[in-house]
Length: 127
Image 1 (cartoon, rainbow, N blue to C red):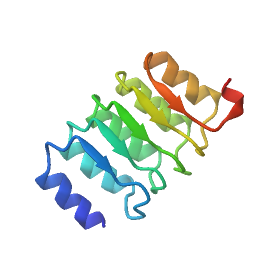
Image 2 (cartoon, rainbow, N blue to C red):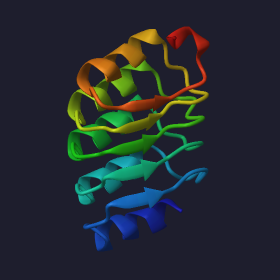
Image 3 (cartoon, rainbow, N blue to C red):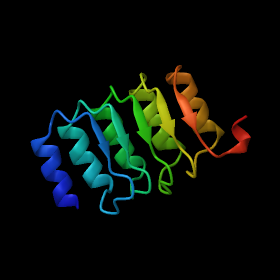
Image 4 (cartoon, one colour):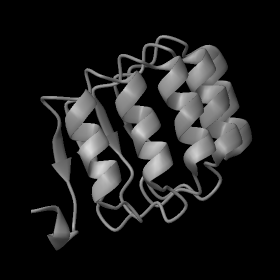
């Protein structure tokens, strides 16, 4: 799958929307290649993928115009990764962090930098 994602990244550099939910081969390396090639990405679903804060940093730095991002069930993602996305992608409108290891600190960073962002989560402590 990683080889397939590299081909997509190289050939489809104008890609704006991608749903890779549940693709086990999608890791930090794959996200880095995708983000650097497909800088026009607007929506990305990488739920249940093996992506960590390092992959999110590469994504955020290369794709600042990202509007929608789903990280649902991404166990390796922490506040640091979400904070990075919030800082670089200030036009983010929708973020799914359901079943992630995100605390109130990460939530607050998104609200601080992405004023209009709707955050989908499962943490009752955010209210």
